[in-house]
Amino acid sequence: MTASTTGAAPLERGSRGSRVVVRVLVATALIWTVVPLGWMLLSSFKSTAEVTAATPDVWFGPTLDNYRNLFGGGNNLWPHLRNSVVAAGCSALLATALGALAGYGLARTKWRGKHHLSFWIISTRMAPIAAVVLPIFLIFRVLGLIDTLPGLVLAYLSFNLPFAIWLLNAFFAQLPPALEESAQVAGCTPWQAFRHVILPLTRPGLVTTFVLCLVFSWNDYAFALVLSGPRTQTLPIAASQLVTQTGIDWGQLTAIGTVVVVPMMLVGLAVRRWLVTGLTMGAVTGE
Amino acid sequence: MGELTMGSLTTGPHRAERSSGRRIRLPLPGFAGRMMAPGLLVLAGVSLLPFAAVVVMSFSRVHLLGGLRLEGAGADNWTRLFTDPDMAWAWARTAGYFVLTVGGEMVLGTVLAICLWRLRHGRNTALSLLLLPMFVAPVIVGLLGRFLTDSTFGLYSWVLGQLGYHGDLMGDKTTAFVSVTLMDVWEWTPLVTLIALAGLTSVPSSVLEAASLDGAGLLRTLRHIVLPAIAPVLLVALLIRSMDALRYFDIIWNTTGGGPADATKTASVKLYETAFRFFDFGYAAVTGLLMLAVTTVVARYFVRLLDRKGLAR
Image 1 (cartoon, chains in turn purple, brown):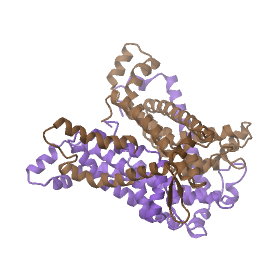
Image 2 (cartoon, chains in turn green, cyan):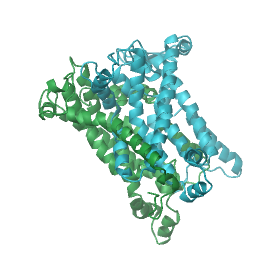
Image 3 (spheres, chains in turn green, red):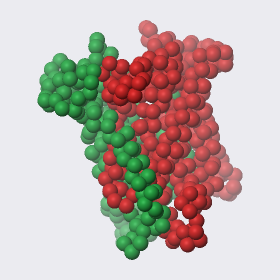
């Protein structure tokens, strides 16, 4: 990105020897990263016997049996898929909506305790999940929210909402207040100025927030393990339960792994430009 | 969540009252306040309420059968915390994981970022591929790890077999510990790489050119120019990874379940077991509060460091 056409920065040019070292290191990292994923994908198209063969084999007759069994056979995956889509989707949507309001308010308030407030918000995100899930379990039991999708959506908000507020706050803080001030001079109410001037300018921030919240709740295991039940099990729980049943069907397991993983990789890479801001929760300015 | 929660909500308005003197200003006035209200109310509901509940639980015996019932237990759960050698070991293991995973991720991530930064062609493709593990659900990382290290058909076990190692990776205390650590390193090194690379691309090339004109070699440039320049971003990465390392659960629970012989039983695993296998919620609550306290201390320390660098807002 920084390398100009006339001459790269000295560090980027480097000697021939160091360039070889760099390439070897990157290649090693790529192998270390990609091999497990590639192996999972490959194994999901193998027959049961081939998956558990003592010598690994890359040449085999691909079959869709594993996927067919998952979606049509005894382990019907559809309800789990639906639960995951609804719980993760609704939670991400709610977090983005509430986060946009609160993030904007936080960016524009001149309240003195603002610093404390934003630290409180971010510290709820950092709280260990295990410590949060325990009381939520008891509270949900009293309220009858165990094994319900609204319960899961609410539980996911405990980590999605602080994240959304914090991240969107970073996006709103980049926009000069003069924008909505001039809109208000032109006759807009504060809400109209927010809705028609500020919000459209934050579209990348909204999309990034939604996608990352979606990934977090789609991948959640701890909350779903404790709070879901037979009716609301999500995909990660379904995946882990393939193991506890008698004997492990590794072919199906690699197939379900692929189903869980691929959509999140696609949406994650789609917002790559904003990943740094997103994943550092706005703490790193500039990128 | 935590003590800072209570502190921040009470000290803020008080200070405002005292300093302004004449008129008492309401904490969140005006349009900004109204915009914040729904989000903050929900957030309070899903964080302050559970926090209060976990404090109450820590002083109670919790009965689940025949309707939820709390029975006062005084400081029993707390005194138990300090006399339980299992708990001390769980924390020692957590500390071990913390150092190994976070240390490994920071070093590997930074080295990889510097390599990518110096790569002239294919940087974007390489980066996209390297980022993939971050989006994999930790459960799947754990299950996939089990698949790859299975002693009869695992790909990695087979490779190690070719190299002369024939043991069961998940069956031995040391190798199980190392394997689980490496799975976390596999998943999260890319995050450090991504953050460090963002820091590197903002190092002005004029500074680098000046350094090279002054005859500074590669290592000296890295040591005296590049690393200081990206130190603040690395600190942010360190903060994020530290918070996650303290609550490391999904992967361990799906690979070893805390075994063999408790070798991978961290504080999180211990807490889950205490609550949902032995249904001892009071003691689990104490463990949870301790985790919260440790997290808070670590976060405060890093945020103060960041403040000094002028990065936190």
